Image (cartoon, rainbow, N blue to C red):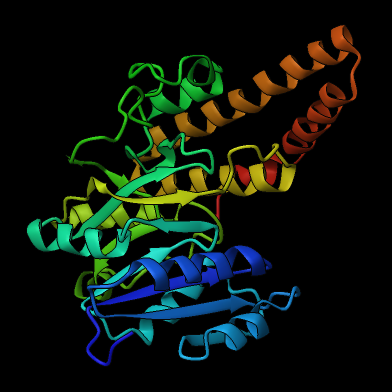
Length: 314
């Protein structure tokens, strides 16, 4: 770390002690050229995260919050203390590969007018993690998700339209949204946008940020030369709480960034999503008579029962 800071690396932790420590170790090991600082906000973890971080990395700026601020508010808090010309949002369940921070800042220097930059992400087995970037949510793309066609044809650009299906992220390309798990942004642009919109309590913060940045003239762009491992979400089973938060975020995004008619259509699509899953797992539960199908049916039944909540958004 250096007194002259080029990039401030913001990490938000919540009960992810081991993952966060691994992420920080990889940043320190792999970041050799660009002057940087690390700011960690611990969201009232109960697993000893704050103490472990402070013990192993005494020079890191650690903000130990007494309450769970969520992703957006915690990043806003960290950014307020940042000194770098750039802010790098980095998930705690990541591992930096091959000087990724150095390479991403170098990429931003070569493409200074884009305003937001991202890299390429992999799962732990080094298979491609396509959640590094996507298009702004569209009715067509969400309908393909609702009907299950996205899952059936994930590499098809028609059925996986919002996720750039079929693109291996192996070339430089301007995109509409860069994932907040590995997102570099100019600090002055972040300030101009007032950071994350805290309307989004969980999920959707990065999509909203990139949408507002594009409206301000930015052109988010990604490079294959800055690579990380991002563990999150690959094998995680659907939980009702998680799906409720995701749907609330999508409804909120549609209300803010769509006209009233399109927002209504989005809500109908999300209703369709839950009904299709509910019917599908109901049939599987009858045919297979296994516990997994029964558990999945119960999850989607719970999500449907909460529809009055998630249909309101945030």
